[in-house]
Length: 84
Image (cartoon, rainbow, N blue to C red; front, side, top):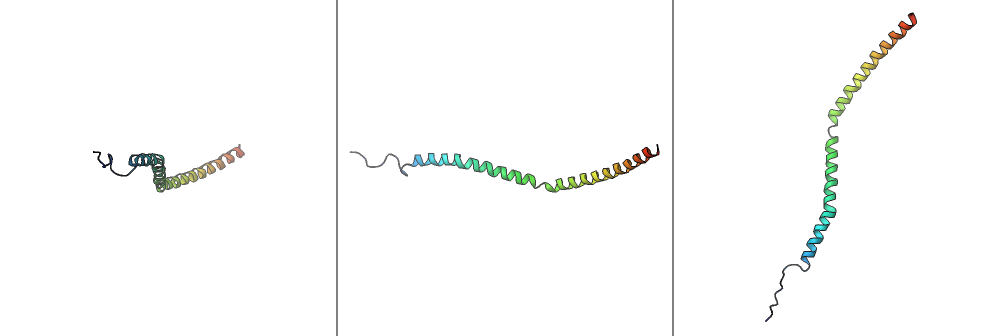
């Protein structure tokens, strides 16, 4: 006599559904993880603005000091040229 118990138990079309789920994860999951990782990387990288802001302020002060020096020396050179 033939048994009426199915050879495979579980959800009908189960292996096909698993394959579809794997394809969906690869299609949508991996790019989403990559995009999220890039966003997190860029946000954490831009949070170091405090150190950059201090360095920029330092450099701006130095540029201003050098401009004043060059401005003073430039006036002295003009005076020397006039006297010659």
